[in-house]
Image 1 (cartoon, rainbow, N blue to C red):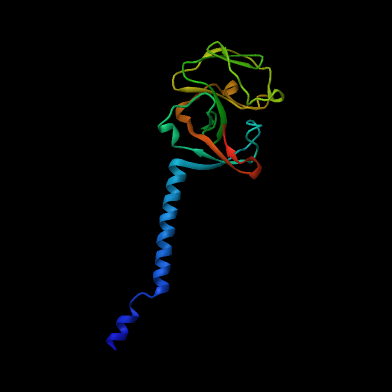
Image 2 (spheres, helix red, strand yellow; image 1 turned 90 degrees about the vertical axis):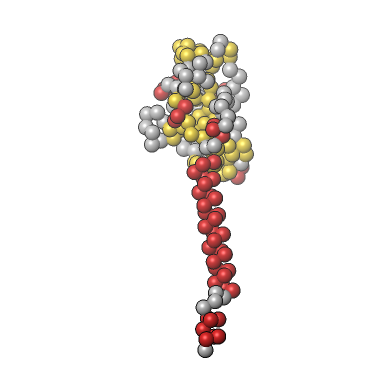
Amino acid sequence: MTENSDKSHQPGPFRNHVTQWLRDLAVSLGVSALIITCIYQPVRVEGTSMQPRLHDKDRLFINKFVYHFEHIERGDVVVFRYPGDLTKSYIKRVIALPGDDLRIADGVVFVNGKRVPEPYVPPLYEDGRSVDEERIPDGSFWVMGDHRSISSDSRDFGPVARDLIYGKAAFVYWPSDGVGVVR
């Protein structure tokens, strides 16, 4: 009798399999949570201000970790908390850096006195808005949407503070015809 009762308390192959599966699931969820909260986060584009590269409802990954090791550069597509309502996030392109002198004349952008080449802005999306010369404050960035004629950006709300920027657009994963690195 003692011999049988000892065997009945030992885990069977099914129980071992379930335990291993649950352990693997817990590790996978933990690693996924770490990646999503610290490194890459999926986001959905809302609006058309970044056309033609990003479209309404596109899904992409943003890299939340990169700016701990690299500086934000002109041309980066960044995600930030909208200064007018910190519960909202915007995605725009960095045009000018802290300390830069920026001027926009009839839609043409000049940084430090030089015209900025903007191959990502098709002629159809340009607008004729102007901004008087302005020095970008330390710790802030001038951002604009690629679809200039409809974008709400630094021309409307001013430079964006560094601490509001929380990620760099990295990779579009949906829809399938738009898959690719964000440049």
